[in-house]
Image 1 (cartoon, rainbow over the protein chains, first blue to last red):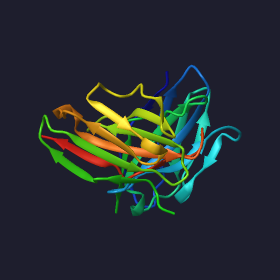
Image 2 (cartoon, helix red, strand yellow):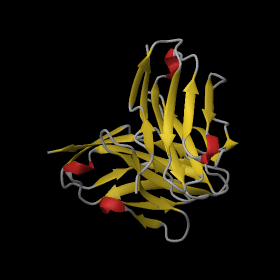
Image 3 (cartoon, each protein chain N blue to C red):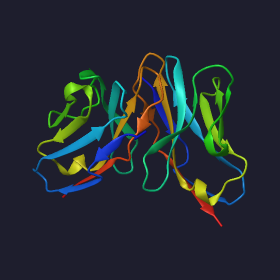
Image 4 (spheres, rainbow over the protein chains, first blue to last red):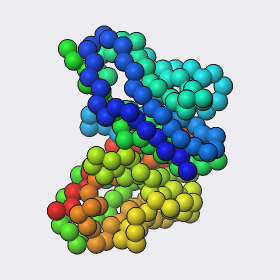
Length: 113
Length: 113
């Protein structure tokens, strides 16, 4: 079975500052890794995904994440946040041979002016 | 192209009543998933259809929940009778094939009072 831990339930950050949202996962099999974002009053949107290959993955809106197999982490980063990045961010995994997505509890990103 | 559409967006019902949620996937997507987020907790998988067949229903909480996907197009999720703990946001997602991007709807917020 797989599990995902998002270490911070809320992260406040000043506008134009960098941000890192932390995610650790646990799995006994190979997995795909995802970050989803939910903007206020909207559905879940895929931000980026890691399937294989380069461990640094670039996504939409200037976000990137790095897969670290030894630390079983997949932290999300952005060098400079904007007020429009205010949202809830979900780290997720799915086993390579499974379509079911296992989500973390989410991290609310608050952008301070 | 239309995205995944869910109806209704909100539903408030009394304990013991019946509610039916509907999901219209993206046209041509054989895979359809239901997920649920109970307040304060993670988004949890409920079940997975491939066309009209249930591929995996391991996440269905109990027999008060019935999901159908007649004709392999739209899907319904019926809760009968609803209990207080069924309150939450129900998400539907669809994907074209295995291990391809899943697109999520905006969710149905169900409140049982």
